[in-house]
Length: 397
Image 1 (cartoon, rainbow, N blue to C red):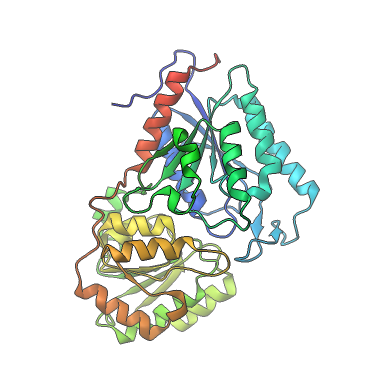
Image 2: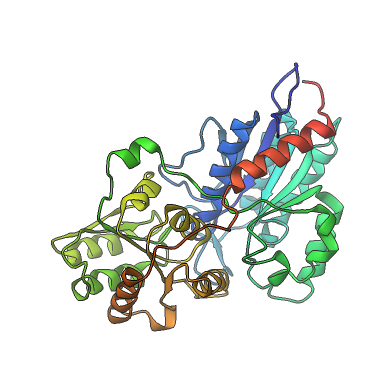
């Protein structure tokens, strides 16, 4: 049994660095894991470099906001600030300094970097100084990478060895939030064997619904259409509105959840086009309760949404996003569809008619079943980290 670290001087302190650039999945996963760390006895500070996400549940964690940065589009070639201006060196320096200012007085026992060094390479000018600083404390922090199940293929072949070198230089552990029975890490990171001594699978991180929200019947008998942060969700939401009348669920309420990154003019256009029986609203913090009660889920194929759907045991249609350099959602949807977990509409085929046919197919089959997949990744991760910090010992307060 994993026990929370014990120290008469103080709680162990964790600093969790996370950067979301287009969607919000990275930040939501970090928030769920932070709450699990809190339950395991940690005092948590989240340092976020992305745009603010309304309604984010971070529990009792402290939250440090760096000057926001986002990608201009799905190609991740141009980074913009909060005023939609290109990021310059002064912006990067200010972010680095604020990050270090957060870490130094905290003297964290544990530092987690979300995705890096397997991504976010363009932010190494702030992350590497952080790792150097916490390693050089009186007693160095445990340094851990928190990474999802599937990586996007690197743009250049030399990136893989570079990632391995950074893991060996700085990292004590790499926690892969996935299940090797579905997708082993080496399927998308072929050099995984070179860091096998530091790599642990935790299972998928799932955000369980609040029992009170489920009991209130939120979303009962509805069709829930969602797309995470929503930056690139307009085609799916539009197709869903048009597909409704072509399905046996044409008399059910269809609730479209537009993420915070969907531009306001697009959001208003969708609301105007929706018609009676279709609700268009911004994403809600009780999303998982809606899933638990709904008849059907239609969504893109991001990590968080797909795992929430499986955990809810609800019939589902997935339309994975495949633009730019993104391969993650397509691979995850393909693997799960082969297991019979859900219906898939590939992006190249997305239309109201194709979506309606997938809805009918999903209703004909059994609900997806997460049985056999590890879905307690937050608690497992927190337990592993609590044990590791306890065994390592901590600096006095």
